[in-house]
Length: 288
Image (cartoon, rainbow, N blue to C red; front, side, top):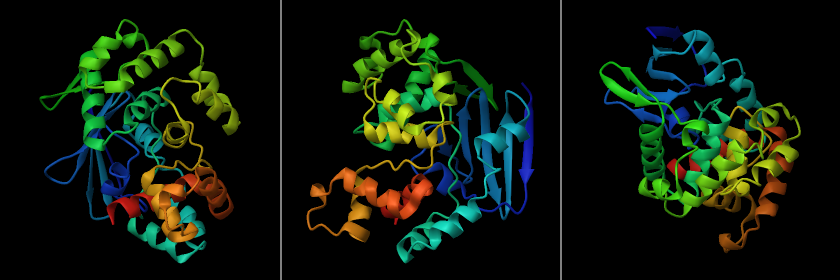
């Protein structure tokens, strides 16, 4: 694979920090010059922003323009989405101004399932470390500019990995969950291709919940951040519960706020854009 480059000028709704540090992805790392380098699929890419121009450079498994447009969701009008959400209330408007450059990436479904199982009760540096060790040990090596990168391992590449092997990577209590989910996919108990084709979000969510280590929040993250792209879901973690309580529910004890109450409120307020609203609110609350 040879190096390719693609530039986009006057791009709107695209800020590197907002895209890569909003909690949706784990394999992009900030470089000393402020750019980000990451690996997705069989592509290794560096993304840099100079003024209003974004420069994508790397080695790609295909045409870089097509890969970039798909992965970064460039054919969706985020300006229109932000305008619609901003009209809901001042709080949402403020959160959008803070995270105005967020775009929801089209990430591989299998990678998102495993990544978000690893994310349960975990922090970002640790999640990134575990995923990197998993890829180094079982993925394929790609070299670019003298650096080694590793693809995310397929279910087949993990078929002989034992629970003990996972434990050595620092997975903790998630080792058995990863093992069981890998084998559920290998044994065709869940068909990821059929899942991709199913337009019924409720059915897909119920299927995801049968996977070991996938609870409601992890299922919603997979639905939102993978190529499933279900914007109507509203993943709820501690930050989201906190921000929804502070802004709307106003319960003196936020731990007593029911997730069903938050989901109902999100559906009423944000409709089928709830997932994108969640990202703006989550990122604003956690970072600002």
